[in-house]
Image 1 (cartoon, one colour):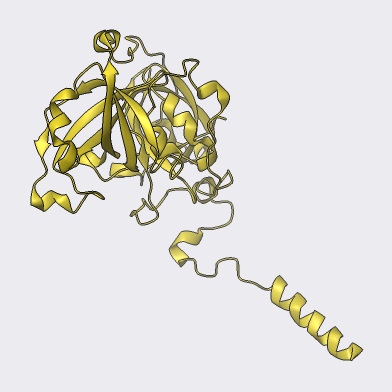
Image 2: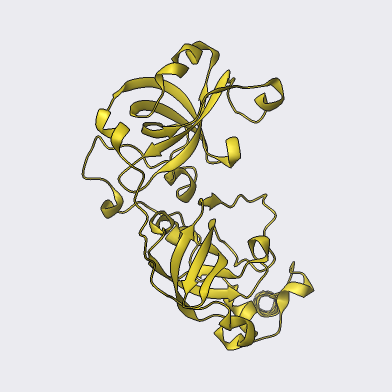
Length: 293
């Protein structure tokens, strides 16, 4: 009996020590040991959902909901009702039969709306059911409406989709509130072009002076991801990093634990980024990974 246990223990030890770490990995993705671009693409943070810190919440309990949270906290807000303070909208459109399948509810009309919140403004595709179609004219700049969060993307221009629930009132001050101001002057940061001639810069942390920040996008498991993305990323956005000689566009990606920081990336800010790759990102842009807390 003891001899059998000994043989079993040896077999288990051998099976554990000899596992191929590259099993189920394409040869082209393995790289050579110490390759800076390969090492930089490895995940640096645990794949855990971001939790909204108390500092990110508004002091005003009546403040509108930051619709961008549905992308940096995927799944958390779906099917909840939230207040949207409408700061901008375009005209409503009837939902054509060809577009009806893209929505999770039966929608008669749709309207892009920008929801204002203390932490920032975000766009959503507002849907009206046939029962609420008469309310379309009551949604305008300065309205506070209640919406049900349906999806994090997939709407008009891939906006989050929300369902109209009710108009809660009109706020004249909100109607006069301008969008969040964009600083006219942007400081100079790191010149990303330097990484083209110096491979040693791959994997280093540099400062990106943000001249432009595009919409936050949620990376779905089914998305076709650029080849050089780090494993486990949750969100991405296109940014322009300003330097003394001009601006360079880049693909800025976020791990789940840092995703809330994407809400604060805007023109005029300076953010720490790790250079992942000189190209291979969205539209072949350089890939940067957010390196802050």
